[in-house]
Image 1 (spheres, helix red, strand yellow):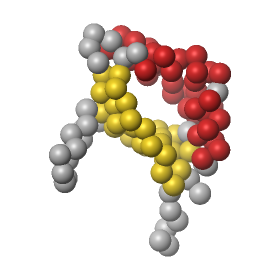
Image 2 (tube, rainbow, N blue to C red; image 1 turned 90 degrees about the horizontal axis):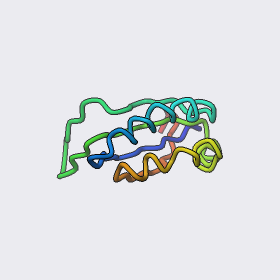
Image 3 (spheres, rainbow, N blue to C red; image 1 turned 30 degrees about the vertical axis):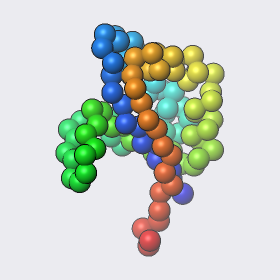
Length: 101
């Protein structure tokens, strides 16, 4: 069953250049480990509560094991500092559901 990585991210000025490098480099790594972007930025509309994220990313993976392999891979570890040094981010892993539930 698919799983989803959901990331709430805010870019910290003046680090936008580092984040831009990260965005450029991360997609092929995600895809190599079976991930597919379902949302990557784009317009956000708050429907309830006070949640007002700057940027949301949703990545679908075939399994939690695929996420772990991506998250701990040497390729990702080599660029993760670009994100960590340029953003404030929160990330969660959510299990998907089949269509009958």
